[in-house]
Structure formats: structure tokens, C-alpha cells
Length: 309
Length: 291
Image 1 (spheres, rainbow over the protein chains, first blue to last red):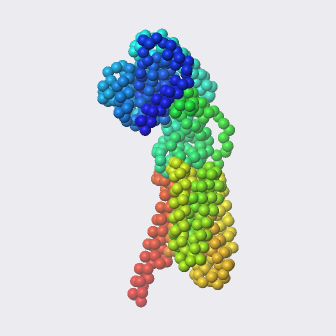
Image 2: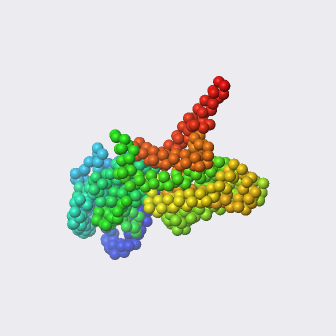
Image 3: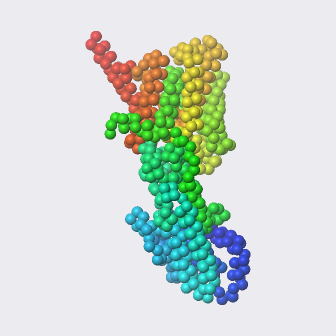
């Protein structure tokens, strides 16, 4: 699994180089003195950001690859070696990667550790800081700035290049941020409520004015009781949520039943902690963000709902 | 909590509770008489065997046509009828008894079904898709169950007499020759049909549980075939209603709650039923001793 993740990351890197011959050529054209920084990021979203900011000046790999869960990651010897040989290590911070400190110590890495979320005022989640800060593009810009500064410090010879690359990325983030605000604000506030089992969207909610309501008492994997189903239906009616985005309910008939009963729409999949594999809908940070916004907008836009009974 | 809130209100407030109840009533109406006849014909375990036998057909239909209630129902029906038919054929052509050949064929079918499901990859998802839950009954499932119940009751009424006679005098239908085999076959078809319907909409446990438990419990209350069937239906409907309320108020999974309640009715009947129960037997022994 971890081997796969690292292999996927290197494949991703290959694909990236292949897709961007111009950049690769630019890198080759650099004088031999310009170093290529080896950057190791803890998970796929950070790795993508580092790639965007660093451009040809960096060679990025992720410890936890696309579609993998950073919460249950365990380092492999290959990961330890990669960290040991890295020029820059990028972490999210806010205790998202509880394992990274030990990994750095055991690898003997003494270089720069960038905490991408530095300077962000964290929200609270279940008694601690909510680590999912990248779910707001304002924070995303902060991440990119932190990355830019760290990379420039690590390779001052390539400063101009990195600055230019980062400026373009920041501009794209700002545009998407404004666009997202406009599109969500176009919906009446009463529609901007969804019930979801995800708990990773606190920053998104705060930044863009969408209410995420956790389904009460939903346990995954077991056969639900009539009480559980009734509670969710009642909750959806009371909160007047417009959509149900619940993962881990594998019986489509059950979701359909609840949605019809509560007169809500059934929404698609949201990406929270990892990108999707390269070539799919959410394979970069910005594409992931756009995908989530589109999914939410689809779910919250009013539709004619047929009589539930 | 008032009595109304306890017993009625959940069904008034929630459509899914009403649907579940209607499904239980429909299932109870046809499963009462069919279960009774199964018990009388000493085929109590055949229901369970058939429930497993339809797995490969339903799974194959899912693999070929995707999630389609009708395709999976037809697939399951064909597979189960094939198993029942072959078991009957073996019993007729060789000295092996029908229960033995039934066991052999249903195990073959079960293995085939599990194989098809595993080849499809994620077995859990497919199992959930194949076997519904009573809380998620949709329009199509409801129509299917209601239709099957109606057909079953009509057909049972038409062949009631020969079916009942055969229960008590197995030689009778053999004297009839072809007609006897025909009635037996028709009854097996009805059995399969009911299990297929219950299976798709409500899951295995509920389909077989609501068929057999009320019928075995009824035996301690009634003696005639019609009264046995009536008591069985009553117990099935009560189990459905009470089980749904249990699931609603006590936060229990619905299918098991309904079947558990039917099981409690059985144990209760066994202990204190009016006919041949442990209590009734003790009483009659005492009165014998006195006499």
C-alpha cells in the first residue's frame, strides 16, 4: 500500500514531466549550477501545491498518495530514505500528520521543514485544531506563500523563477476563490445547507457560507434501525437542508428512500483529505476544489422534487 | 409517551414506516398459508434451502443487467425453480429422498452464487444490493410483494383442497397420478415466488423468518388448516408491526427485530399455547391423574 503510494507518486511525477515538455525543456536550459530541489510532501494535496509553486525548480513526491488516508499512514523504509535525501520537507501542521515528527527524527533529516499552514488561525474541531485548512482558498493562498518563501530560501539562485511561478498560482487561486464566492452567494441562504458525514469542511463552511450538518447517530457498516432513519429524515426536515451527501451507505435504495421522504437531493462525492488519482476529476488541488464546489452547487440548486409519498 | 405516540405516531409521521408495514402485511398474508402448508408437509427446512438456491440466479442477473429488480427477481426465480425441479426429478428417478437431493442441489447453487459474487469483486456491496432491507422498500418492490401475495392467495384458493388432502394422506395425490405432481409443483412455484419477492425487498432473514416462525407458532393454537393459516398470518402481521416499532423506539436493526419478535411469539406459543403446549400438556396430565 505504501509502496504503491510512493510508486504512484513517482508515476505522477513522470506523467507531470511528460505533460509539461516546455517546463522540462526550460529546466534543461537552466545553467548547470541551478539546483533542482528534492521536495517531500506529506500528502497529495501539499505535493500538488509544491509542484505548482516550485515548477521546474522542484522535484516533488508525496508520502501519502492520491486516494490514500493520511490518518492511517505508516512509514515504510523507502519513505524514510526519501525523507533523508530530501532538500525540503513540507507538512500541513495543525497535527494533521501525527507521524511526521518521528519520521523526520528517525530519518536523520536535518533540513528545512515547512509547515504549510503557518500563520493560519485554526478553527476548532472536536476539542482540537481543525487541520483541514486547505478547504478554503484564502488559506490555500497562505499555503502557497509559505511554500514560495521556503523554496526561495532553499534555492535563492532560482528565486525569480519561483516568484513568477507562485504569482501565477496565487492569481489562479484568487480568481477561483472569487468565482466560488459569487456562485454560492447566488443561491438563497436557505438553500445553502447540506447534511454530510464529512467533518473536513469547517474552513469551507466559514469561508463560503455553506452549512454542513452532520447526520445524527449515523454509524456506518451496520444495518440501520428505523430510529436512525427516522432521525435523519426528521433532521433534514427540521434543518431544511437541501441535500444529503452521505458516504458509506452502500445501499442506494436506502439513501433514495431517505432523500424522497425528507424532500432533499442526493449529492455526489466530495474530496476532503486526498486528491483523486492522476487523470480523474480531482487530481490537483484546484481541480479538487472546483469539483467540490460543483458537487455542492449541484446538490444545493433547487430542483423539482416529486411527491415523496 | 401516550399510547398513540407509542404505537401509531411513527407510521403517521414517516412514509418509510408505512411502506415497511404494508410490505410486512402483504408478506404475512401469503406467507401464513404457505408456511402452514410447508409445516404440515414436513418441508419446514425447504424454505431455507430455496432461499439459498436463488442466489446464483439473482447474482448472475446482477452481473449481466446491473441493478434491476425485475432481472434479479426473474434470475432468482429461475435458479430456485431449477433447483427444486431437479431435486424433485432425482427423487422420482432414483431411490434418493427429496430432502437429500434438495440439500445437494441447493449447496451446489449456493457455492455457484458465492463464486459469481466474489468474481464481481466487492462482495459486501453486491450482497447489500441483492438483499434489500425493509426500511428501504421502494415502489417497485412494494408492487412486486403485493402482486406476489395476491397471485399466491388466488392460486392457493384454487388448489386448496388437493393440497390439504395431500398433507394428511400423501398416498392420495399419488393415486391421482399426474395431477398430484402438478399440484406439488405449483405449490413449490408459489413458495419460490414468495421467497423471491421477500428476498429482494426485505432480505433473506425476513423472507424465511416471516414464513416459518408464525407457521410453527400457530400449531400451538389451532388445528384446522384454515385456522392455522389465519393464526400464522396474524402472528406475521403482529411481528411486522411490533418489530418496526421496536426498531423505531429501541434503535434496533429492523429485519432482525421483526424476526426476533416472531421468534418470541413462537417460544410463547410453545410454552402457553392452547393446544399441545408445555402448559397445556401439564394441565391435561394433571387432570388425567385426578380422574
